[in-house]
Amino acid sequence: MAADRDEVWRALATLPPRQRAVVVLRFYEDLPERAIAEALGCTVGTVKSQLSRALATLRGSAVVLSIVAPAPEGAGRRSSKEEVR
Image 1 (tube, rainbow, N blue to C red):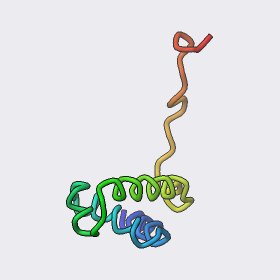
Image 2: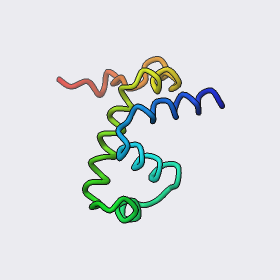
Image 3: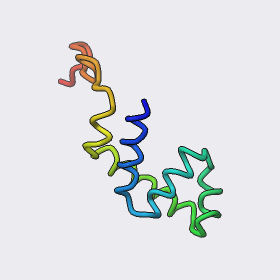
Image 4: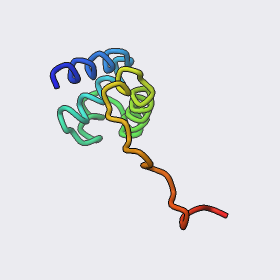
């Protein structure tokens, strides 16, 4: 688990400073968006957009993808009853 934590920090280090700060304050410090906005001197909208961009970047990161367990076989697939016609 310590290796995974190190990999996550390496992925965070690839983010621009403001995006990294927003992610750390939101998920590591568990601050609400308004408190993050106040701490960074920006609007709540800016916090939301920076967080969205950061998470999109992290989702596409090979580092993060390598430590996230793959979905179980068939996960996310529709059953035959749910097929769209």
